[in-house]
View 1 (cartoon, rainbow, N blue to C red):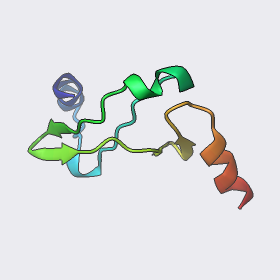
View 2: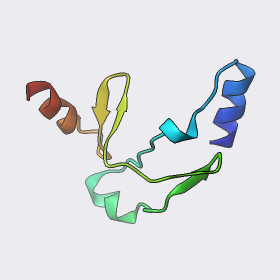
View 3: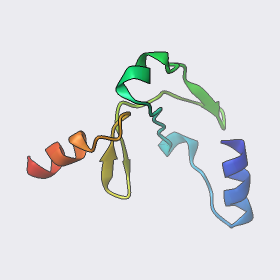
Length: 74
């Protein structure tokens, strides 16, 4: 995350830790092996999310697009 923040700063962009979400992705078989620990970045604790939104697409840990499709048809 620090490397991303440095890259963004070098390109006149700013990463806002308060608006940052993260998602750990894995197959169904590997989901239980993922860590549930939070990340510290910019003095802010960031908890892993069950879904994240990127460019209007809702993603889940399995990248199944199920939550996105459910949102679209509701």
